Image 1 (cartoon, one colour):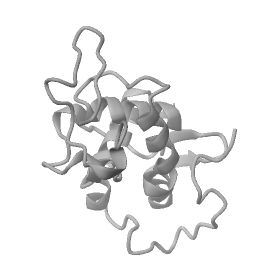
Image 2: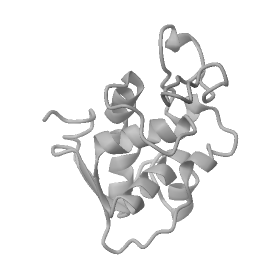
Image 3: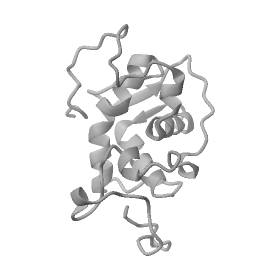
Image 4: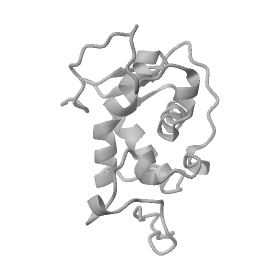
Length: 164
């Protein structure tokens, strides 16, 4: 398996965090994606693959309790950026253990969490482009922001939809 992000080989100094790092538990829980990652791990018994984390994040952002399809392009893009954007930082802070080579994420054994469902809170009104790291979905996605499923985009019969 290839590395899931570009900072896989970067040396980590657990004693020093950069200005974008996590310095307090508030930094952990103030970000929707980080809360969603921790919720997924809480529900998955403390261990999951990066692919499953990404699929759940995209599904939840779309307002669904179930994960997005594994072949979904947005899931792949979210998976590729999760390592540097959140997992390595949460690992550095000691909240979870992240192995970029195997693509496995585990909650720290010391962590006891109670995180609410992420599909009920999309990050305090933040746009999906901000929440999902600026990633968008579908043709022309680079030119538009995403804000969750609209009525016309969602198909309740199949559970499919796209970020609009």
